[in-house]
Length: 126
Image (cartoon, rainbow, N blue to C red; front, side):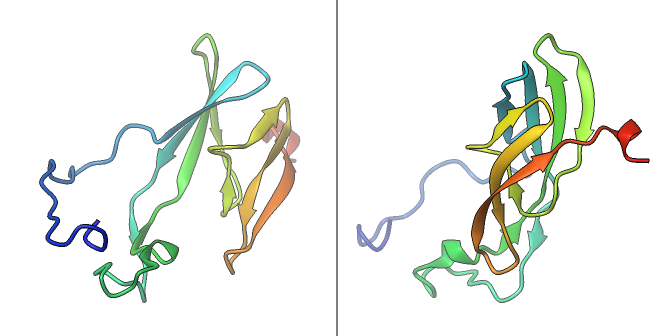
């Protein structure tokens, strides 16, 4: 904002000390709801803590967190937590139906891909 309005200063509420209970709600095509919960923030090295130092600060944020996913039936029955590969982004534009997930995946170099995954229930993993 300061780059567009000289002298602008934040006058809103302070940043809260805690995260909300969930960060995403994603309904799927099989009448389930995926609830995304952010884990603890992890400080990244080499980031620009002062956004005035780097005009593209959002490309290398100072804090990152992983999202864990819990799944519920639409009626409220808890189905359990789903482990997803690191870098998989279900929200905001994933497709989920039965055991198929199609979503954005970002590799270790920041290159985005669209990938197809299959949900494997714990009893099927043996």
